[in-house]
Length: 220
Ligand SMILES: Nc1ncnc2c1ncn2[C@@H]1O[C@H](COP(=O)(O)OP(=O)(O)OP(=O)(O)O)[C@@H](O)[C@H]1O
Ligand SMILES: [Mg+2]
Image (cartoon, rainbow, N blue to C red):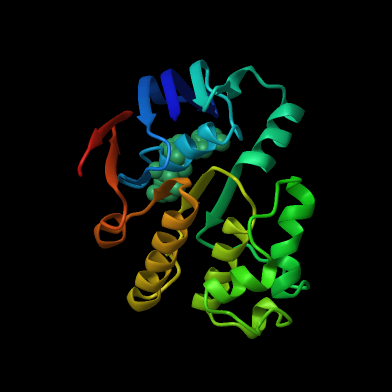
C-alpha cells in the first residue's frame, strides 16, 4: 500500500508562498492502477515527486509499503527508489547515443534492481522484437515510448510512476501504449500512479482521482 498521511507542502519562490497541500491523505492499495487528473498547476507532478522521495514534505508521512520514506536520508532514498520505483515520462528520456537494448539495460545497472525480464523478452512484449540494436532517433515517437515502457517493466520493482506517459503521442499510439501497460500491469501486479490530462487515457486505470485545491477526490 502507498499511504500519505497529513502531508503539507508549500513552495516559496521570490518571497511568494504557494501552498500546495495542507492536510493531504491518500491511500492506494497494492496492485491498483490509479490515474491522477487535475488542472495545470494543481500539483500533480509535485505529488508524484513527493511519493518518489524526490522532494520532501514540510510535514506528514509517506509510506511505501512498510517504509516511511520521509525518514530516509538522501542516499538511502536514492537506493530505495532504484529498487522499488520505475518511471515513465512524457518526453521518453531515452539516451540518444545508446541503443534500445543499452537504454533498457542501463536502468538495471544504475538501480541495482532485480531483473524481471530478459531484454529481448521485454522488447518482444512491447512489439519491438529485433529493434534492440537501433538508436532512439531511428524509431518513431510511439516506438520510443514503447522502449520507455520496456525500461520501466524490465526490473522487478513494485511501483510505476508515470507523468503524462502519452502526452507526446497521437490517439492511436496512446491507446496502444495503454493496452501495453494494461497487459504488463496484469502480468506483474505492480502499483501504478499515472498522471494524465486525458479522460480517455485515465479510463484505462482502475481508479481515477482528481486533484483540486490541494484535495483529492475520487472520479471513478
Ligand atoms: N520548485 C518549485 N518552486 C516553486 N514553485 C514550484 C516548484 N515546482 C512547482 N511549483 C509550483 O507548484 C504548482 C504545482 O506545480 P506542478 O508541476 O506540481 O503542477 P501540475 O499539476 O503537475 O501541472 P501540469 O499539469 O502543468 O504539469 C505550480 O503553481 C508551480 O508553479
Ligand atoms: Mg505536471
